[in-house]
Amino acid sequence: MNTWVEWRASVSLVGTVVKWLSVPLLFPLALAVYYGEGVPVFVATIAIAFSAGWLLEQLDDDPDLGSREAFLMVALTWLAVSLTGTVPYLLEAHGIPGIAAGSPESTLGNPVNALFESMSGFTTTGATVMGHISFEHHSRALMMWRQVTQWLGGMGIVVLALAILPQLSVGGAQLMDAEAPGPGLEKLTPRIAETARALWGLYIGITALEVVLLYGANYFGFAPNMGLYNAVAHGFTTMPTGGFSPEARSIEAFSAVAQWIIIPFMVAAGTNFALFWHATVGNGRDLLDDAEFRGYAGALGVLTAVAAGLLFTGQLTNVENVGRIAGAVEPALRHAAFQVAAITTTTGYASMDFTLWGESSKYLLFALLFVGGSAGSTGGGIKIVRWIVVAKSIKRELFTAVHPDAVKPVRLGGRALDEKSVRGIHAFTLLYLSIVLVGTFFVAVLGTHGGEPLTVFEALAATASTVGNVGPAFGFAGPMGSYIPFSEPTKLLMVAFMWVGRLEILPVLVLLTRSYWTN
Image 1: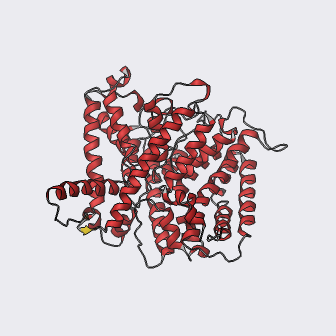
Image 2: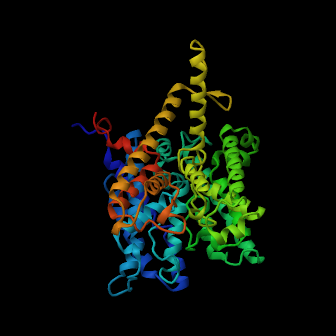
Image 3: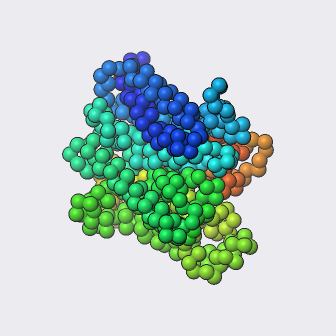
């Protein structure tokens, strides 16, 4: 077999990314120093990340990336950073001999659990296997590291690397195409590195705005629990549509004002960031003219109205919540808007335990697991634009069935799409749904640890949630629960689901084909 892929170049650049991962680790290290807890854990993690990355870099002195090497580099980067991200979890759980005691109650001492939590963080899934989400069982530095992993993964590890590492400028377009979510990412500037910096600049700016508003609400007494730590922590996981929270009850732990502040930021996170860039350069009209954004905003509006109606009329099974929400306009509208935005954009936050909702409401939320945000957003899932193209294709087929001689292209925003793009969207959507269905079978067969009951609906929801990088599902994997009861083989399978889902399937699956590796 003649190898066609220069794998050393790919692995060398993976090493570069891992080495520079030691820089964002300085933030939790600073918190560890400030709070006086967990310092050795992050000192050791930084040393390991830097050393491992430097060693991998030595495989190729002058790496040159083609399209094949870009696929391999992107896929391996997400695995490598997720493996690196497990180190703080394992070190805190087991301790460092002679330096720091371990935390035997931590569920993250299990390597499979640590990898699950790390992959869930970097892929912005938000599914957790952390048994005790509290500062009594974990250091504030480690809890913030969970948040940081999601923020890094939101706009993309490789896109960040493109923005700051000049050695990735050659082959940058292939790297961004392989990593960026959606059918395609618009090139905003002549140079791809400038585009990466523009996207990350917007991302940082919107994150900072959310942090200021959340902390401001706390400062003026409208959000009592939203101190500076929590404001930063939730800013780090809203914009990447991540969903991790230092609070065990997610956003339910905060006031209605804090929840209302978070809602528009979730909506913004699910919007194509290229539209924000156009707005900043004076083309704000592009936002309203964009066909995908109109479909996205319309879907959120309709779904919120439906969910609010179900909540207002008492479609809940929990007596306490019925008395608090049924017949009350503001709570019904707030919880509906929050949960529709959280699941549609794949953020995964929860303003309440929606597993207690009535059957009709739960099935509505389940359907949202398959929607996703916009192309070019930080959201996961199938993406709104693909569903629009699929719907227009079906409409065209119905038309041509009656008028077989008609030539009717699929149009998006007034522009005719080429048939190759349409076929690609059909293929992706079918492949995505097939992976969810086949994955559900294996999740149901592999099951849970210790015989925890698992229905087919719960297995389907958990599979769809991990493939779509949503996070919470139903049953014990609901928003106030965790994925701990799943067996270790099931968790490893879900790690693969999260990895494949974040990279939108094809960049990973193409590595498994014979034609990729041969001349």
